[in-house]
Image (cartoon, rainbow, N blue to C red):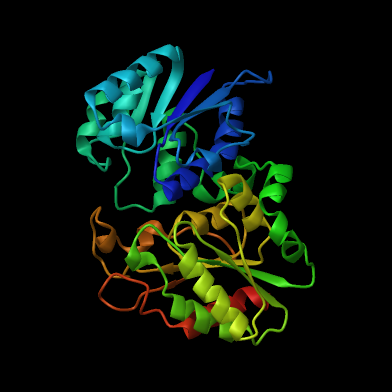
Length: 357
């Protein structure tokens, strides 16, 4: 049986959808009595920018990593995408886990016996539902974990709750450890120091309103310094200068810190698995910490009111929370979206729940 999953972006959403892969694969093998090794083939369509997070997954037979964002900018690009999809031959099932017009077009270009997606009332872009053969109903305001579970399992008549579907979600991901160690070779001695309690500061997010200020990270680090074995690691994406300023300030404050090099997703997966705690805004890296069962504290700018809508600033906190025994969060208490108002002392108090258990 051949199944295609379409979830091309964004990073955090790809990670969340992929977290169900281990349970999804096992459930389909049981449902359809698939015993042979290659009896079930799961293929994933993802933007090339985020494909690294899915590489080495034991649950994915093939990754279709394409520059989807670029291809959809022109008619020529769309025709090129259509030709590629037609070359993929036929699938038994195609699942659009994204619910956008663009993602539904990808599925329409693919040959399949059954194209699955959200119904008109459940899709982020309602017109996307026009292309689906099997339509799944789940309110858009529902928690993202429930939505992902529903669109993957319900069309197959598989009744499973979210907690069971995510009980072994770390097994959905894979890592090439030798390659990761090569990328991180200058930081390996600090990473492999067993006596230290390693804390990763995620310094960047996709939006300024989701990014914790450097000054707040510094003040948080000083509070964490009350525990003598704390070792802080700084991960950055675009702004190395900003990360280096914080690193210098940490050194000036006599705090143990490591400025990490630029790295690929494979190295990031290994890095996160080596951490005792990951702290940062609502972004793909903190989502990955949750997915890999690494303790984390996510700083949310979402208000806890009854606001609703697809706009980030109006998305209620309940919709985006990820579940995990040691995946905690601190939220904005003002009426304006943003994380800058979150006091380092609040993050510190939450951190103690991880450190002291």
